[in-house]
Image (cartoon, rainbow, N blue to C red; front, side, top):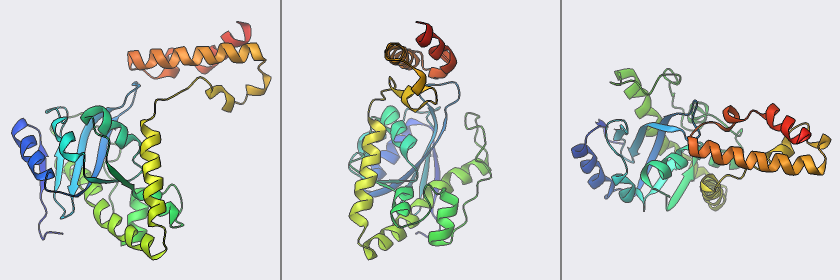
Length: 253
């Protein structure tokens, strides 16, 4: 890392163009996101953190500038994240980005035998003996301007991923598990971007065994309709039709 890596807040088109040019010269970046999911079907991106291999971090503010133009510049990069299921969904929705190569540090750690799923703070301490502050984990990321504590916290979560990735990759190669970690990360990426099918969610409900075939069919159609409506209205499905109501309608038809 550089002796004095920089943190840059990207909240205007000029800085976004500068970042896009910089990304064109990178090969590996780490990403993290801050988002709000409350009362929404699609979580809303509040901040996108990008870290380079030399420790520079850019905090892209999607409330001030449209981040979509940097999606093209990131398309051919290796992207590192931790527990990135929501991150890759947000990258796709906000930037139109499907990473060409993706590595998830949480999955890699699990393949190496560490507890799964392990949070970033515990994993960083275990693998590279670095402390990760969680002081702003419950902050309101919709508020502007961002305060210095929020900026440092957000930058840290992205910056720590690069040395963590490097050490994990070394351990994976030593144990001949690197290919497995890459494949598992790619599987997470693929599964995260697949359209969700919720019609048979009821199979995992405790009452599934008590439903006759007719009720099962009705409940399947109800859940399909609920999911479609939730996506159109961008509201959580359970708010539109609670589970108890769906079960009642299915049983009584």
